[in-house]
Length: 96
Image (tube, rainbow, N blue to C red):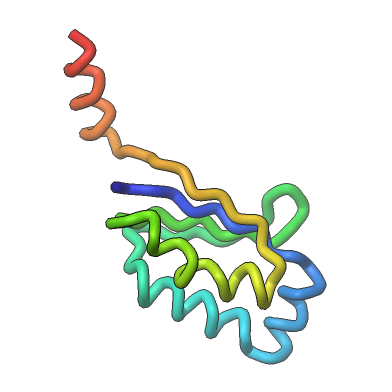
């Protein structure tokens, strides 16, 4: 299932992660694991945030994928199912 990950990173923890090199390492490790079709980074709600869209095969993937963000960067994480235009069109056709 295509999902979107949104992670707000704690400012103090992210600052330390930038200084130590842990933040870029953790983000690269996550992207290597999930192979996102899209990844974006920027401020949201006043903190560093990343958004990644990827295919999650099973919800049991969440703990190993997300634990670094929780532990190292005190991240607040949301994962939500999403669809592209073709998925929306398919879903709307099914309503007829």
